[in-house]
Length: 69
Image (cartoon, rainbow, N blue to C red; front, side, top):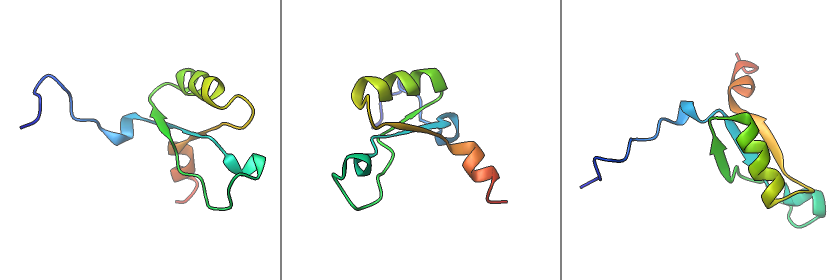
C-alpha cells in the first residue's frame, strides 16, 4: 500500500527536463534521456550546473510539445 503522506506525482507539473549531454564529450552515441524533472527552471539549471557543469542542458517540455501542434 502506498504511503498516504506522499502525493502522487503529476508529470505535467514538472516542466523542465535536465539532460547530462554525454555526447558533448564523445562519451556516447545513443540519445540521452532526461535524468531529472523540475517544476522550477532555476532549480533545474542549478541542478544541471552542479552535476554536469560543462555539458548539461535544460529543456522546457511544454514548449517542445507546443511546437508539434
